[in-house]
Length: 227
Image 1 (cartoon, rainbow, N blue to C red):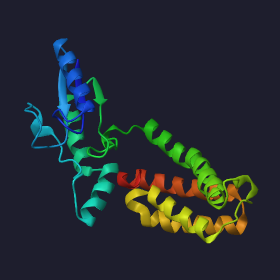
Image 2: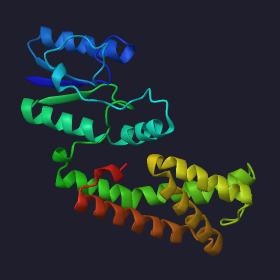
Image 3: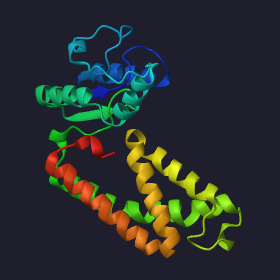
């Protein structure tokens, strides 16, 4: 059996690494072939597979542009995705186990590993589940709660300036590196909610938006837009 163990760091940095190295030793002792995958780091321990490690996200960036790039690549890092896809093609493991990969290695599934079923489920979640949950929160609860902790007394679609803009800005922040798109969309959605006072309208519009984006991503293979 062959197992890939993926983790942000390949040196003893904290609890996640201790668990990862314990797993590596335990599996190796039992005759399992273990292939590590990590981000390149000068502190990494020697490994026969170090040349296959990825140039991960620069989490120590100090410039504004560097921090924005790191935020975007924490969601989808093309370098890491390509390196991991090459490793999968080369090693053909029976199991891939992810330890702590958040922030430094990409959390995106390599495009080569996306099956039609996975694409269908991801699209269904984006178009059917997310619009209902998000609109209940962003337009149904949050702006009313900002106005009063007894939010049930605030009519749907009623906004104060603070509630309107705070909701739009927070909605933008949720969209990470594409915050400007989230901001424009949040303003439009808030305006439409104030005008129609209909959560159903917003859920429908949100669903159509997410479905259109999902179809665009699948057609063009621009996976970075699929967060």
